[in-house]
Amino acid sequence: MSVERSISDVGCAGAFKAAQTNLVLYQQLHGLGYSSDGLARVRGSYELATTLFAGQFRPCGRTFIAHLVGTASILAEVRAAEPVVVAGLLHAAYEEGDFGFIRWRHRRDHLQNVVGAEAEDLIWRYGRLKWYGGGASTQFERFDTLDEIERTIILMRLANELDDHMNFAHQLSGELEYEHGQQHDVIVRIAEKLGQERLAMALRQVYTEPDDMTWLAPLRTCHTGSYNLAWSHGAALRKLLRYIPTRYLPF
Image (cartoon, rainbow, N blue to C red):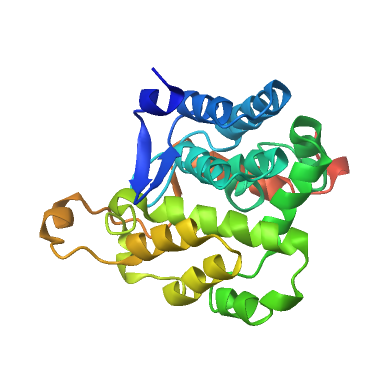
């Protein structure tokens, strides 16, 4: 049985399949010809993600780690370089990850030690890219002036968008009436400008509302953003402590 045929835990959009577990992702990467060293770095990235996103869920109720795996899987599907796939697994680290008692100024060093400088730089830039609230339109307008790294970051954003909308995830969350000011048509056109026609087609499909949404109504959550079930008050306390000068802390 081929690797492709053995994949069962996937999200789908048209011809796109996105792994949702690390085991399926490893099979996918092996089947696509990624190196053993690359697979080892992906595993390290995944293991770090499990600590940064423990107890976290996307608005639809899916685990955050499944979304991270799905994003990395889509990047692999479009044959992104290994550091990009690694970065895809941690793309939300600086926005949503819980670094515990690691202080803000040490976060980047912590990630670099695990994923390397190139992948960490992509993760850092991803978090700083203006995308919501009209940001995607801005990126589209200045597309011809973007350098290779900036286009790679946008590719990561597109992979995130696709995985976040697969399997009616958007319709099953409280985000249904909360679009972050995104312009779906612009995002599809950005994918086309990147030369990612398959990705553009898949995005166009997941952005299209199904004809019958009545069966989705009782399954919809009230969450309009990611949420944490693992000691949420403790997470807030840890974030507060990172701002306190070190000399005032016993650790």
